[in-house]
Length: 551
Image (tube, rainbow, N blue to C red):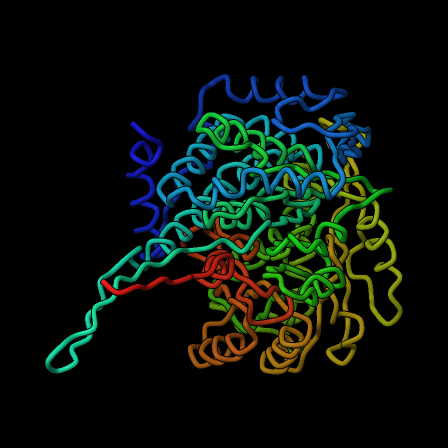
């Protein structure tokens, strides 16, 4: 049985889910769905890699590089990866490019889906790799970097396969001309753009990278995966599996390569500007993303910084609302592109099913909920995780001194019972007036939140939509029991290209997006020019070229 036939049922089920937009998860997100000893083996595999050369890749290098440091131990991982200059990487990518582009969509989708299934066997090893490079808590590291990332990759993979199959490969074209007819034989090829460059980030090295990687590979493009120097191991494990399956099926493993660099000697700009790199996927700060978008002759997909909002108008359950938005702020210490930063609260308070609650009482409830989670030794350390890098820690310290703001809740380090040297920080809560746009109109990445006192929800909505249009936003949360207000928020935020989550409570949070259902990013505001996963995310990676001749 070939790999396409092996995975055909999964492909068909995933395509169906892509259209229906209901719940679908091919890779189980709960650790208990896997073998009883899978966690132990995964941890042992991770530990065994420390201080050694990473030997799973089917690529060589002129030197070995590795700068990773654990935010939990604040010690170097000591893992080294094969590194080559950009010309060598490009040359190796070209070697297998022709064979890969000429392979049928069925061959490519089978190979790539097989690599995801192989990656599944490394979910636990990848969880520990993610923990000790990004600072994510264990459960998030397992889910986001493993099953959720693989599902997002599968989503892009089947979306790509479907686009490649949208039109027939050939047809006979007949045009009646009265007493005679013109008959042409026509055929079409989906031609890949060229070498793809996937530029990873330090906080979500697989979740943010796999969709672009698999979208480019399924459409026939060889790929260079350029991880962040501080978070290489998680994505290296994926690249290793892709290379192995490629080689087993007669393709050059260099069709997918790891392109590592170091803090002291970065190679991203050299690769991005190379004439043979035609596709770029990027997650990171806006300045570099904006530069990438200016590069001529390349299809560039970016996810950059944005300012996410919470709008509070009214609620049926104030305690559930407070718990939900508090957890959203704490989750991974706010180091998520979808984490809320600006909380717009009416100065006159809000209405609840139990009556009116004042602005001051609402703030008191929020502070109590944040402290209740963050300072609980059984909850706080595992929800907060660790601060990935020192820049975020410095930003947190500097923000506490912002002139014109009032500190409602100071950030503090907490003890992690498993890692005494973990770099931790509870949220910083700052109060500002609605007129102080210069303080809250930029993303302050990390556990930093602004309480913005507004006249009413409509003033808050106006500010939030304006910031979304000017600076971007990946998410918005809104709480209202008024249908007219809800419709207005939907309409205004839609024009700002910002998705809205209404009245969330319980086990679903503004930070989270679901594969096969939620579009991650809209491409409708400056925070991202692309979306996981709409057709545009796929079709810009290849072109249709037609051929015709008399039949």
